[in-house]
Amino acid sequence: MNMEIGRIQGAALPAQTATTAAKPAAGFADMLGKAIGQLQSVSDNANQKVNAMATGQDVELHDVMLALETESLTMSLATQVRNKAVEAYQEVFRMQM
Image (cartoon, rainbow, N blue to C red; front, side, top):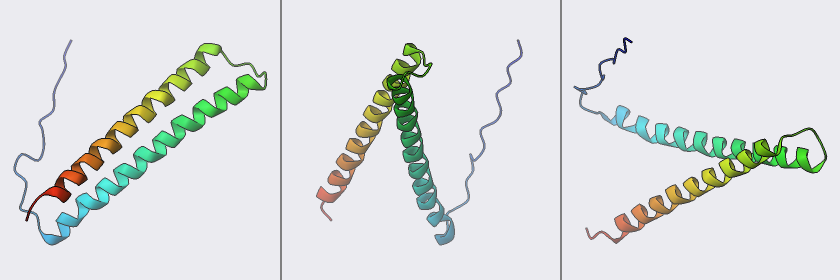
């Protein structure tokens, strides 16, 4: 079994300029948008499975339960991330200048 681990890039990063400092903000916004989109996708999937089961379509019960549990865990994670972000914001707001 041959597993090769590649070298980690970016060990020596060049100094950031005003133009490169703006990129992380856009990257964070993109990442946040994608995460919210994935959250919506998980929720839509669970709703589709529940609706299919409620209308008598051929859907396995365990698929519905897995979709609902995945949605529940995803929502819990999103809530905790939001709570931590609010805590961080409040902590920065309380800092004295």
